Image (cartoon, rainbow, N blue to C red; front, side):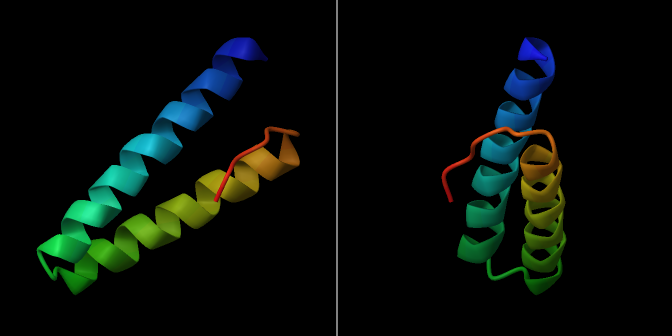
Length: 54
């Protein structure tokens, strides 16, 4: 579970940074895409007992 937990956290961080870049670029499509991906990643983390800080 350690590797899975680490990978989820990495993906959340990368996606969050991508979301911030999309927001700065005012790219609504990418903002929606990254927001949706983050929601999915948070849901996966919660289902597997992985703590995340929103």
